Image (tube, rainbow, N blue to C red):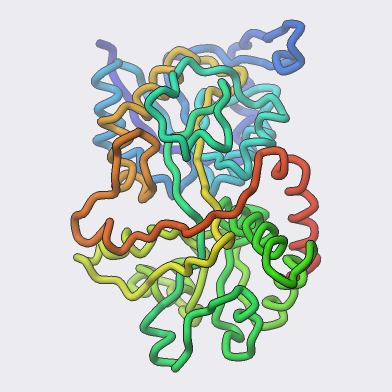
Length: 377
């Protein structure tokens, strides 16, 4: 067994010119337009995985287990968020610097597929839950975790302010909610983008509301002092009063409601020995069933190693622990949230998620993002 290596690397755009200055790789060419003009770097036996910085699944123990099983060296290349993963893949499309992508969700995946950023994998989907396959069940990406994106609110803060939980998204446009909301940007945040998509379904299916009122709602909450942040971490840990951010450096608070996951209160309870003052707002169609995917990058130098890691990632022993590794739900049949410390008890399930298809994402997301920018500027 050869020596193993595990390093964590933060991507800097200017790095890539240096990466291409070594020994020349080989160019891929075929009749398939997705195979044209791709420069493959020289193989060095190191599997490079592109993921986002918040991803907790790659604990040393998890990586070491894979390395010990296969003898394959692993390097993790991190970006700030899922949007950063797509940006890096697009930036290096003609000369990929990573072999495996882990972290694009179903609001970003259609763009990756449209731009030929992934190639076929060899993993069978027989043991995946149907909910993880509903959005995409094709050969270019596999689900590795899932969860319902929804609003979370601070029960104790509302009680102290003599406020009641919203029964409609329109409630958040009322004066009592002024300055008490934090939302991650859908431009760069996958939960933010998922919630944006959900609002379009929500306002298209409420009695008395017509198509287009989603943008009006975003404009109205912007006028009502909503805080917009670059990503989930800032919204949840810096501004949200109901999460673990209140115990971290840089905490500001002030936001009684934010975008997270319906099971986030369960995660809070797990880390706080069965205590949380956060809960989810379970409004029909105001949530989005998010699935996160992994896939072999088109032009990967270590494609065989990437395939092996995909198989490892969705194996039952590994994937059933996704609630601990990445605070998300497993995609393997028969897996459940753990009961320890109230994890399962405090986790909610969306009453009725929004209905958003891959075709809708591909056709409408750019327009939705542009409308959002205009509404919240």
